[in-house]
Image (tube, rainbow, N blue to C red):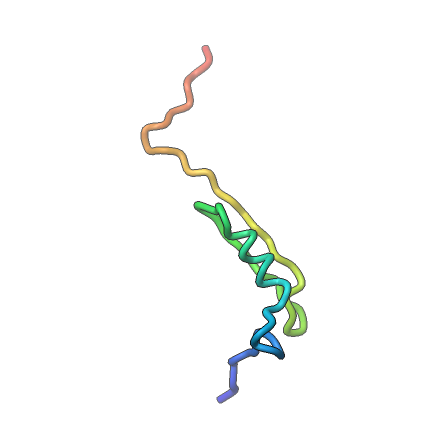
Amino acid sequence: MENTSTSVSSSPSVPPEWIALVREKVEGLRYGVVQLVVHDGRVTQIERTEKTRLSAGARVSDHE
């Protein structure tokens, strides 16, 4: 069985720069996705997709 655990940083006391960026993307996000893109074991891109939820009673008025 292959060991799938990965080290976040070579020095546990100093988090990688991308962790601060992920925290920034998550702050204030109510509904959505924060996605990490990894190449060769390194985070190379961070994407944030935010959704806007409407209440169940919200309707679009017809323009006649």
